[in-house]
Structure formats: C-alpha cells, structure tokens
Amino acid sequence: MSVKTLSAAPLRRVACGGAVMLSLVVLTACAKAPPPAVFTDYATNVQIAQVLAAGCPDVTLNQAGMGAGARDLGVALRAQGYTAEDIAAFPDTIDVGEIRGRAQAYLTANGIDPTDRATVCPVAKREIDAGSPIAAFLTAA
Image (cartoon, rainbow, N blue to C red; front, side):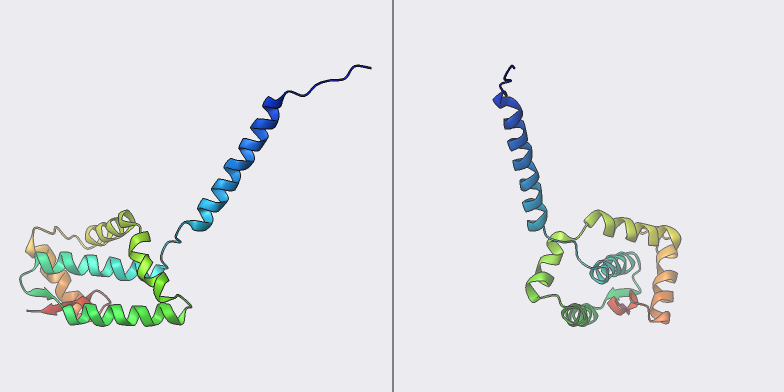
C-alpha cells in the first residue's frame, strides 16, 4: 500500500479562498445600503426642479418648500424604521448616476432643452399648476 502525501499548496488555496469569501461577507455586511426609493425620488425631484428654475426666468427654487420637503421626508423615513444615522448616511450612498439618468429621462420625455426657455417654462408652469412633487420645490416668479 502506498501512502500519498498531500502537498500544502491545495490546502493554502482552500484557506486563502475561505479568507477571500469571509472578507467579501464582511465587506458586504459593512457596506452601506442604498437609500430607499422615496429618498431617490426626492433627490430626483429636487434635481429636476433645479433644472426648471435655472432654465425659466419665470420660476425660482422654493427654498422653504425644499426645507419642508426634507423634513417630511425625514418623518416618513423614521416612520419606516430608519434611524437619524441611517438618514444622514443616505446622501453618501445615493447613486448619483441614477439620479442624473432619471432627471434626463424626465427632460427627454417632456421635450425639454435646459438652455431653451421656450421648452422649459411651459413644463415648469404645468408642474406648478398640477401641484406635482416637483412643484413643491418651485415658485412662480
């Protein structure tokens, strides 16, 4: 009967592979979760309102509306079980590319060229008249 000797190399690979897996599990657990959809919606609406206000001289940003919206958002998130620390971390975890993409999709869907007030002002007015979530951040000048 022959006795086979195991090389240490396969054991090192297993140990290293296990260490890599453990590291991935720890990193995943430590990674901050993305913010909930309601936070992303809020950020998108603010972004769109900023574009509309910048492109239409008949509209300004409603700073009081932005403050009230942020407070309402905080209340809603706390009611869903998020802590103040969770909420404070959301801006660091938000997908900026997603916000830009959603805002661009809105502009495209509404035929808005941000540099052409003839395309911006009618949409801004429509949002204000409808009392939309975007309109909460706008004021007719």
